[in-house]
Amino acid sequence: FLVLSLTVKPQPGDLIEIFRGSYQHWAVYIGDGLVNPGAGAYSMMSIVCDRARVTWAGFWDVVGTDEWRTNNILDDQCEPRSADLVVQEARRLVGTELPYSVFTSNCEHFATDLRYGKAQSRQLLLDLRAAAIVSVGVLQDGGVTCSRRRNLY
Image (spheres, rainbow, N blue to C red):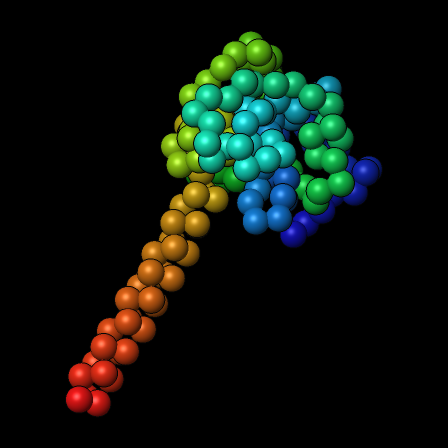
């Protein structure tokens, strides 16, 4: 992972990807801090919560000691909205409560919707692809095991 040094500063409207062990948390940099849906920020509560309050916090209060990078993930596919519009919309949402789902409305969906006007989660797509590959592997192994057992009897 690329970790930004203290001398590199994100620009307002940038998406910030924060590496939290087995998952990534996403937030939007608005110049004086980060805006993000609070359900997924530091806990696995996002799995059981169906609502999240949009919060503002200082950059380092959100990032902590975790690795992070600016990752405007869809810039090569989508035209980003103006930084002013992203920041204005992010500030407007602070304090509101939004639907939250790990699968359909997570922090990456929130961040990409603000920047591009299009909610997407590549993290989820990658997780689903990995799960599908593992499932196929398990099914194939199961099939091999069954055929071997048939041959033994």
